[in-house]
Image (cartoon, rainbow over all chains, first blue to last red; front, side):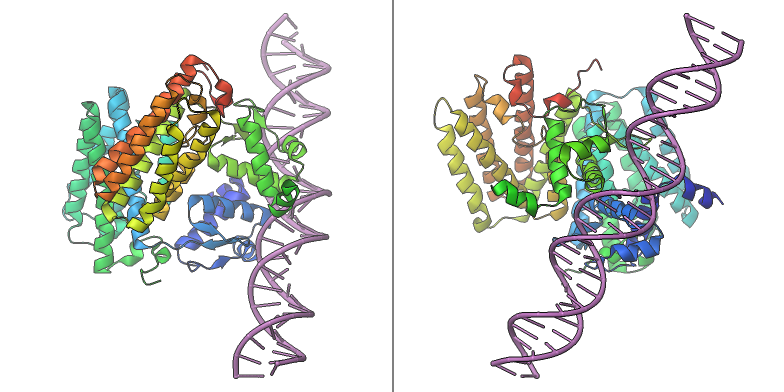
Length: 250
Length: 250
DNA sequence: ACCGGCTTTAATGTATACAGGAAGTATTCT
DNA sequence: AGAATACTTCCTGTATACATTAAAGCCGGT
């Protein structure tokens, strides 16, 4: 019912984009496989025009790759690509918090950040942390990162960060759920939350270099999570877009 | 008539994209102005479908902005936006050269870079530097930066740098021509070339932090060029996309 | 049996027709 | 005279039909 209403509200293009993205991330298409427009029309139920539109947007998003002769194929990522994408996001977020620190942030703008921090504190206080708490953490973490980048007050930078975070495995919360099954899960979350507090403190004190450095290191937690999850090979079903990873042998 | 042949070779979408981009950058449309598809059809001579495609790509490129009610408008940039975009590019290029330094680059891969450097040396040796030499510099500089980012061997990063450099005022050579009319032109070029040599040296010696820092500073030369050109208000016609800059008062 | 060329098929790129909706304008009422 | 409402007009989003081109399969020759 709500679905029915939103279905009518959003454009066919967006509907196709969401459907195709889910299909790709769920592994419905193999990396390197050509994605036929006609086939996409059948699976999404919309006509070719919005499907084409959605394909272009998914290419810009980084999930698809244009075939020289025409059309698109599902992009394949190496583990290195993913690690680089995480480092890339960390670098951009580092620039954002440096801007925030150097340019100054009002106490009023800092308040929602601190609320976020307190809510996260409430979550990580429990030991062990429930799966529901992890789920809540993902949402709060995403909100915190979004608020943080906005502190830069730099539309071009915010835009670029959004684009870099569009790849699910590069997003700030990409590997949090996968981490929930790990024994060191709570410890990692505590460290991450400490990073959060430190970066806010650095911004408050106008310490640009410190804020930038800690933000870069913060992103590297995601890289650690990925490596741990891949090594343990447990709960890999919690990893979105794992289907897009091609082994180094390919 | 190579034009006639290329016209037939490239798709209508690309043709529309190039035509519309030129139109926007030349100031044919005012920032904030809605860009009508029908009007675009008339000016480009292609039908609505490729025009629509081109509009979407130009939006992703950052030159257009989607209107909530539908359609697109020409994006307006503040001087701050442009300076931030330059700093952003510098940060990304800094990451690229850090990757290159840390991961190591073979002498073979470094060779084309050094050729580029020698060619640029030949240009900046003359005093004063001719306009033709400036023009050659732009091409060589673009080539050098492209080779440099490729040394990172990181497709996601290269992709992101390309996107960040798509905005003409953020590209490595965006303000070089505007600088050609300045009295301090040669001095700036000499400094830029020194940066080039230093960054290659740093990469060779695996000095990641040094390479990153010098690359960031190198980008800031573009910021200085922009400020000088805007203050002197001379030869502003050499600045592409100046029409997109809205004053702080707007 | 394998390779090369031809034919057929299918997929993309393009053009256009149609419907729904937003914005601007004119008119009318207060 | 001003504001609100209704109307008209234009614009976008969507669907579909057509043409061109690339790819795949088949047939024939070596």
